[in-house]
Image (cartoon, rainbow over all chains, first blue to last red):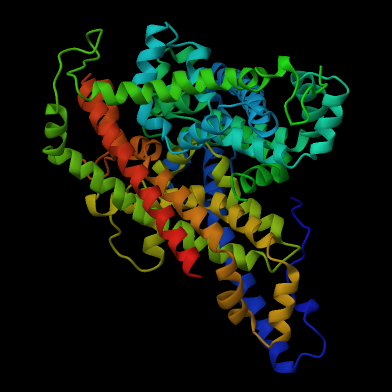
Length: 295
Length: 302
């Protein structure tokens, strides 16, 4: 969907013949609406701004006057402390590697399955679809014990695969792909098939190239989800050098205890990669969410 | 290959396995990491399975069930979970609905509102927890400071007071996840044809009347989706509570998922934890099924 396809009603677009009283009501309403929106959005930015402001204050200042916003002596000392004390480069690398691996596997397995469900016809297709549908109802976290035991059995604790594999069966991703594939014109597939292309080739050379929007939407929301996952890596990773960023960050608190400048620096360092991803792909992320089984 | 021998939609012979074959990779992951563990959870609930010994352990019949159902801590964590669900779902549905409707009126500033509300949603829960550890801290935190600014002389210890801890965690959660629902509502608003707005305006409906009688009813499907997603997500709460209070003070914020985590991984009582898992699973399932049934009935009556 295009994000700005239908312009919403604004005061300028109110019909000119409208009585003046109506026009004033419209204007007043817009003023109040804008006021409410601005107030809430500023409130929403306060925690982010405060974390950033605190992280660049000298530790001594934070102790003497913790709720102040400004400092005459901005410093990156807290960031230096985090790098020295923690294993931050490892955590970034681990988060990156596990997120990429999971995303690639999810997109491949998910799109292939969605293509099979959407375009091919075989006897158990409906059964498979209903089973998949039921999968949406299974809350993954409730299954953490058997998942953990299976990976322990396979010797995958403290490995990338241990973090990656259980996150691959992403039912929502299959649904998003299937919805997109259902909209592909039947003739396009039939033409490829009539030319003698196998199903796999039709998928690879016809369907995937025209599916870029949905691929990038799924890529981003899976990537963000895996990057931010906390509970699962907390369970399977105990080695500090194998921790992902969210799990590693919580260990910073144990190292430093109370010093808030360091805590806020950790928060900022954890936030930056995803805020960057968000700033770059804002529209794709929003489309991905909007496509999450809405229609 | 694609030549059809019969005039029906039958395809070439080599094709019979194409669909199942392409479904296979995903199915393997699905079976190994979702269906298998679900079956294991059901089975382990009938055994005294322990993390310390391999195998399922001694058959226990329904004794795990009677222990769990008679355990006041199980009921308390369930109550905490439901309380958290109420505290988050109500504002996360209503506030995101209101803010999205208002933001939809402005073309130019919309990117800013979307950024302000949605940016927190992409943050890892660990980052959110770090930030709110400081914001809710006694004496030095922004939240107590803000309370004194508005005239509260002795603000409560936001995370240390059992009466306030869950409310504080819920407020942080609303801040963190509002953007997701906000975006879903914005998408829903895009689907209302402009002609509907115009027709209502020509009929003389003011902005407030249009919202009440046209926009909100037309967002019904989105509201259903947002509410179900929200309830299911809230019932699975773990991260922010684990990091902000670790279930305290005095267990007043401990959710069901943490009971599973603690009994399963810390105490190693897998059989007991499996039973709790299954009961929580049933609660989540029932909530979503009841909701869907209600919605279907409401839609039929319309």
